Length: 451
Image (tube, rainbow, N blue to C red; front, side, top):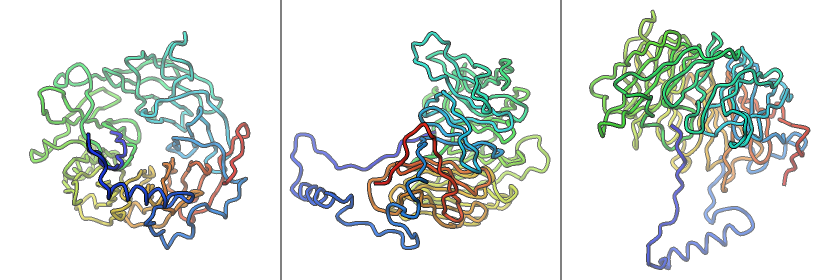
């Protein structure tokens, strides 16, 4: 469900020379970019942003040096965990480094942390040829020790899915969903795929192209009670995707009923309501709102068609406003908020066509949405309940038309803070005020110096 960002490039003609016009444009481009990294026809900066380029109001000593390529807040807001050269555990309020954990994790694996049980799922940072048994470790965030190990082999790894309020880690192996005790006492349950899918849970076809996001073929509910999962059988050719709701406690698997008109759709993304009574099933033609079977007070089924000129998919991102509204991601960073009961559009934010590529993340509460736009190189803050843009965060450098390096960031559960890392520094920013709350510094690393 992660899709590489596609860059447009110059066309080539096998066996032919480049046309004179293309040669001329290449020379002009090279001359324009010599010295100062600008294009010949420079894009105008966003006039409402007071910065263009490096933020001079943040001194070098507050440009945190603990750069990371991934980060996540625990759902309860107790910890901020960053991944780069090992893992670092921070106090999310003060930016104080609490400890380092010498572990690693594949970039495609979700970063799973649990603040209530103080746990991290990650692998030991050892060579693949090491005599130490390979496995996914269960680490204690309080002291950095490994308290348990989920066995793996090189050909069958355990993908972290999440944790439950009852103290279980949920992982996806080659053959099944499995639950393991977070106290390290061992495996508790194995949930294999329905017979119609064969011996394993096949991956799903789908996703949300043009935007990096944290969604997968499955979604664990907030408490960890349910897993919504999509699977696309490899046979017969052209088989439709199938959708299931898995009860993690009992292991029961129920089909999610898809209307006949949308049986040929692929998954975009799932989202559970906070009370776990309602599930948003994002499809390639729109968003399906369905009740979680057996839960009282759930809404009636409802389909919201996609409304983008290029693609109609809508991915469920999160519920908001007391579960009365749902946030959906459409093509080209189109962000919409819909009323769950009626399907009415509450609000929408979409970037200009020249700046539609980026990364989007939503606070666990659904209160804020943060979108990083590549071209303008800036974080855009959107109110989740209204779908209206609130402002920007300029993380050390922004609002300059150049060749950007992707900004890595994580949104706090309440949506009020964002932890950001880019080549100019790492820190925690206030989302509404666009101010640096605290740099993320590790005294074992060299300090950052602006250029």
